[in-house]
Image 1: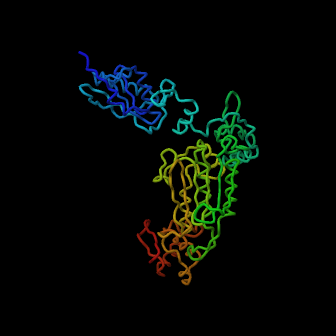
Image 2: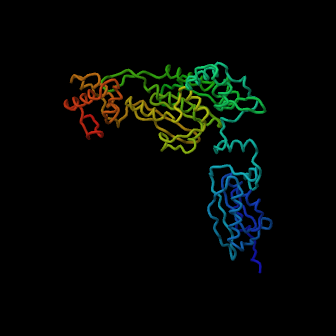
Image 3: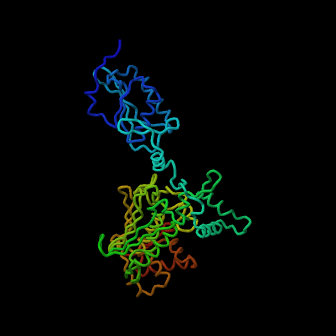
Amino acid sequence: MGSPEFDIYPILAQGMGPDLHWCAEDVALGELAAQLAAFANTSGGTIFLGINPQSGKVQGVQDISTALDRVFRACLSIDPTLVIPVPRVQRLGQVNLLHISVPQGLPHVFGLEGRYYWREGNQVIPIPPRQLRRMLVEKGMILFESQTPTDAAYQDLDEQQVEDYCQAYYSAAKIKEWESQPGIKDILVQRGCLHEMEAELLPTYAGLLLFGRAPQRWLPTAQILAARFSGHSFGDRFVKEEMNGSLISQLQQAEKFLRANLQSVVRLIGLAHEEVLEYPFDAVRELIVNAIAHRDYNLQGDSIHLNIYSDRLEVTSPGGLPGPITIENILSARYSRNPVIVQVLADLGYVERLGYGLDRAVTSMRQNSLNPPQFEESAGTFRVTLHNSPAEDLPPNDLSQYLALGINPRQEAALNYLATRRRITNREFHELCPEVHPETLRRDLSDLVSKGVLVKIGDKKSTYYVLKK
């Protein structure tokens, strides 16, 4: 005896849309897989199994275990395997439907026998090649920097920049003999800056960005827009500069802009007032290098922005944090969406291969009695903000009162160290004065304890010293 049938349209009409589909229990496995993959590649959705899509009649699912097996076989046929919540049985009148849910925000682009589908309205259609490529890049399945743009040739690279880089490569690799040096093109191929296509070596996006004569021909917004404003916000009075060319050239232009537009201030650091820049130069430089190395170059709607206001400095780059990086783990996690660019910048001494440099910016700000950088991710951008007002949570750094105690230069170095840190160990003191015998340094610290400047805490290897309140 067949299952009862009734019209489903009045019940589900209000829910019809791009995130809802229904199909018969005996739907072909390939069609079910295509529907699942299309939902996964769009924004997720729901499939009701057991409804005739032609008549809109409920037929129901007779054998739940067999229907579940069909769903999971369809998921297994998708590449990579589509993992979804276990479908649940839903009663509608006297019959069973299978409620299949496909989550949104899945981390892959899902294919079916080499084809890729998505939802457009209520229809399942192949993903156009350009959109597919963008999706593969955004999901990290294809690195944008490793792609080769159309109509780009080796001649679009600047010979002098390439030669300078190769000399740095030889030096880093400690290759001195000319006969053993790999050729320039071999190095660029090895580093991912050139790619062989049809027996011809063509530059990748990474190669053009790093060494191109005019990379903005292919990536118009691969640039830095820098501005210095007179007040706390955008205003009529400002200095503006647009930095183009290769990434190396942009870094050099940014450094010149900083030297010309960062103001000098007098700040109490340790034992004396010193004239310093309002922001540590090396900290700002690290932020710019980080933005250049890790921005999303596939996003062409905006550029890197360097904005200096009267109270703060902001560096904003297109694209959110890559891969597993979050605001919470940003100082410890290691991941790059542009490993080729990072490696070449490391070869040139701009970045450390395994680090982002943000932790060094934090340290530099602390050493200048300033608050650490503020990190923010929103609306597809990543922003780092530096404030030029003194930090309030650091230990008091007016140590000039101790100068009258007749301290020596080594002890002065220890007190300057404590101006921006809460404690100092014997090992850290030895790092400050590597040429001095450890016993001499131990006596220096003991002398500061006897003079009432420091307090010794712990013993043996766990000993450290703090400023006496």
